[in-house]
Amino acid sequence: MKTFRMMEFVVLAAGAARTLVAAPPSLGATLLKTPAECVDLQAADIDGDGHDDLVALCKGFGIVMYRSLGDGRFTDAQIVVKGENITAFATLDLDADGDADLAVILKEENTISLLVDPGAADAPPPQLYKTPDRPGALAAVDLDGDGDDDLIVIAAELKASIGRRLAIQDGRITASHTIAAAPPTHGRNPMNQNVMWASTHAAMMMMTPDAVAIGDFTGDGAADLAVGTALGQGVYPLVAVGDDFDLADQVSALPGPSLVGDVELVDLNGDGRADLVAAPDVVGKGLGVRFALVDGGFGDLLILAPEQWITNLAVGDLDGDGLPDILAAKQDGMAPALLIHNRGDGTFATPVQIGQRQTIGALGGPVALGSFDADDDLDAAVAFFGGGVGVFFNRGDGRLDARPARTDRPHGGDPPY
Image (cartoon, rainbow, N blue to C red; front, side, top):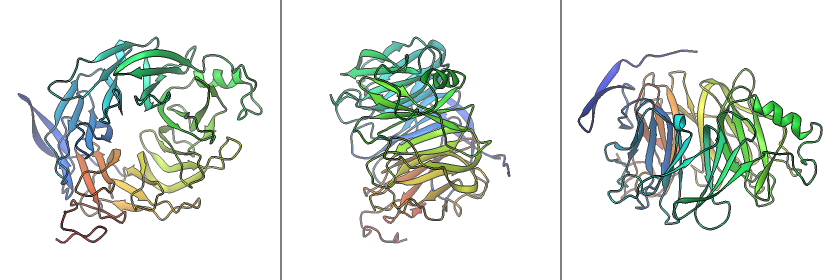
């Protein structure tokens, strides 16, 4: 594997402070300057203007937000939460107003902070929730159908339970339920044919959760979970049963020795069941895909881009065919990301390098998909190792370009530059 040291520096103004930040050289795409290297990046419409904004967790600094102006441009970074104690966040709708809010992990304080309308001048004070165990990973979905997203909190150190499900209403946590704290009472888990629940639970207690995804892989209409662990190549599925989840056998998600660092549950083939996609923790070779089966299990492991050094992924329909495609960050210095188009029949097109002409030696990190310009197509954002975020815009057919769409451009056509 090639490694590159970022040698160009830019000076950023953050309030009264000025910070030196490494930036990828020769970037032709839109470059957002960051106060530090990004360890997480998400796209969501924070201000309700119909355009996705970018929210970044910057290492040792805190969370900053870039508001999209809807034409491919962004505002300067706005500090949302500052502090070295922040380890993860999730975008979710806490108050059913259609705008994205934030849930933030304050690691050393064993606390979840809920921020409604983050960055707004009239935003209410954060709501704090003290967790029994140190929180490690977050995911959000409306589990009870009340219009407010609920929160899944996976413990950083698994002990008596895997985590908690937090019911949220009007921006406040109204109930807390443990996840998979005891063996299922309705009988053996249908996905756990050979190993008793206690054995699987004990094995998972030795792992360190690094990622969690929500999706219905059993096809029963209920949201299931997949938890990736940073000490193995596997993912632990948790099947939704009533208000709890049943823990099933570990599913290998990557070839060894790669460790799981990013997980998605998404229906890749249109059969109504969420399939499993996994990327390595730090850097490893290839992406792992397992298609969900009718019996609630997963099929054989499919490795995509097996010779590419991959870290981080995002999924979404980039070419408008109704099928989610895969964007993956890569760290070989040739290009910061790969785009893998999904054919929908269990196969995928040859990976296409993103940003190869616009970057020289840039190493990709966290990635996000959102609509950042004048059309409704998904665009891509890639955080760079060392600092900075590059934005690449969809031409309308799934190809990503360094320049945004223009309102005078026919949908799907090449940019008129």
